[in-house]
Length: 162
Image (cartoon, rainbow, N blue to C red):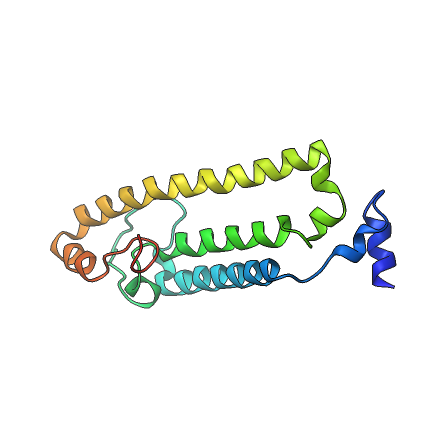
């Protein structure tokens, strides 16, 4: 019954619904997306009122070095990148609904997928710049306290890598 329903939703590719499968890429993407969301949630909880979407030092700001911030200096970005990579794997790999319904074989589907991928690549580039800016702002605000923390937590996004 679900194959028939998916075939009806696949717009002109009636046999493609049977190709929708749970692959190792899907599972890896699902795990990455969940992990990324979990990290982001832990960051929100750890930062509390200090969390902002824009670079800002708040009144009575203190340097947060616990929770996910004890592993890497910018774990919220790690979570976002993980979730983005996971979502791309879930959505674009063989066996996914987008691929099997034929959308990715159409020009509009390729454009949408291309924009989706470019957005992820662009975001990763921005994160590299943004982490440097945040490190400089925190170093300026907290001085030696930041230097000590940065010497203990050497990596910006991925432990032992970057």
